[in-house]
Length: 417
Image (cartoon, rainbow, N blue to C red; front, side, top):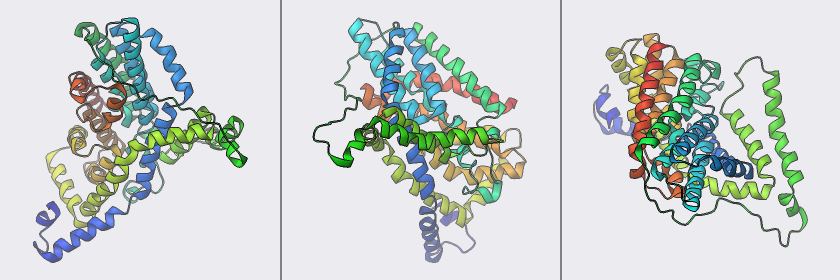
């Protein structure tokens, strides 16, 4: 509708409406590869979170979560670290850890504020886009991404590993756990009920295995196969002169090998994938729709109109903050970092170039805004809610606390650097 009424070069007509529909169809199919990349980065991260190694690690960690405050500190700290590596891994790891902490508290009679601990397990969604699975910075690290003709290839050394983002990541890793620890000490504990648990353990039925099917149950075969992913990934790191190789495809390739290696057998790996793939259905359906929106904006001239609006509204100093705010607002309606980059990316890039703002800084401003309002947007909390038995309304008071801390950290970084 905006394209129909704002672009008045031909007036509002059936011909113009037909053109806009064609723009929608053209854009709809342009980013299928990106959609697949985003599905894989979620599914493989989730699959890695279901490995026996992660479960053993959680079993060790919960022994230290023997008070409400300690549980809040540990759950937040670990969830943030795991989410900086991969957001799917961090989300499911946090959810399983919260569930195990709740079960242990019930069994040992430990007083716990379970919703607060649940919010701690969701805190990773406020840091992920600045980490190694961040959609926008990883996408522009590719040689032929959809905006490469405008900005070229920008390696992660200028985005994820920039001094600004490293400072932000350190601040988040320190301040968020301490903040939740202090909040937990003051908030008190509450009685809670744990619903029946759908076990995340994966066991293979090894009866009547014949022929080539035996390979699916072979630990030797699975781990040798996994090395075909892990070894080339390591060699690439050793031989590289810079970080230009590190993009979404590299991360997914490495995650595939790690998930297969730590599941030990192909059978267990596939069982975990079957559990994880349900969470990717939103990406499968949503991303082509976002690409269609991008097509309308790109081919109708709306991108130019929005760019001109932002140029007149801001200057080179304040533009990153405006980008941060706008990204936070858009994330409420487009709850996907990759989908948001599709829609907002062209506008942000063109405006940054016109205002002589470093494109990499504008990209990270979008990443910060996108991840911030995940503390309001419950879409990605659905797996956590299912595993923990919590409700979104129970998390919101505590995720808002995290959000306030995030605003201070992100805005300070955008203004200082």
